[in-house]
Length: 252
Ligand SMILES: *[C@@H]1O[C@H](CO)[C@@H](O)[C@H](O)[C@H]1NC(C)=O
Ligand SMILES: *[C@@H]1O[C@H](CO)[C@@H](O)[C@H](O)[C@H]1NC(C)=O
Ligand SMILES: *[C@@H]1O[C@H](CO)[C@@H](O)[C@H](O)[C@H]1NC(C)=O
Ligand SMILES: *[C@@H]1O[C@H](CO)[C@@H](O)[C@H](O)[C@H]1NC(C)=O
Image (cartoon, rainbow, N blue to C red; front, side, top):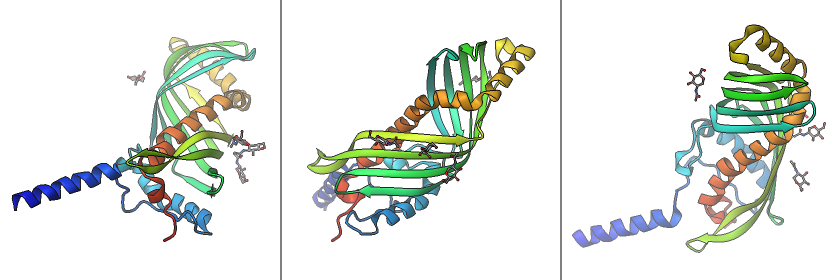
């Protein structure tokens, strides 16, 4: 009796170790040779939405509502913008209000193409900044809020298939890039110039009067940050933990 129980425990532990984190039951799966694979993936982006907002602990995916970025470093060195800023504990609200219009997995060439639209993103957090924006000095620290009315994002990912653990194939990203466009960006920094009301108002007005140019200049940095989030927190988390054959099962 005792020994068979031991065997059972041993086998069960072996199973958990083999498969690592197990895919939760609600996690949508699409067959890689399904001729409607891309439609299946689009539907999957909707199925997963409520779970993504709370986070998927089984796959070490953090909560996306809000999504928290501990630290962002921004540094611009152009003639119009010459500043260093650090954003601490940035909370992003609205990321899961997304609609994917494309989620294509080109299986034979091992690449993904995704397009998505997000309505109303808001960000808040703490900042420190020093330097110049549009020839005016900017200096201070405090809290900030920022928002966009609408955002389009395209993500491309090239992957390879590699045997990583337990002789199983996993998807490994070799290149991820993304591009974003936003409309209606706004930003407000509280606490500039040690809380000097007049300087703070002038600086916030300069920022918002030139916000589209500011966004264009910061776009490459923001795209890099977005690429890192998508690659590290979402795709690598899923792709690195769930074997290829389980994530995109071949048809029986
Ligand atoms: C953010 O700033 C607020 C107000 O200045 C402060 O109370 C809070 O401790 C700061 N939080 C972090 C994480 O720095
Ligand atoms: C952003 O806008 C540019 C120029 O209009 C366009 O070429 C690009 O495809 C857009 N990107 C996204 C992600 O919508
Ligand atoms: C990603 O990089 C590839 C190859 O360099 C390029 O063709 C594609 O347009 C880029 N896509 C995005 C979304 O930036
Ligand atoms: C995003 O794309 C849609 C559809 O092409 C377009 O109507 C919308 O204006 C775009 N938004 C931004 C911020 O570029």
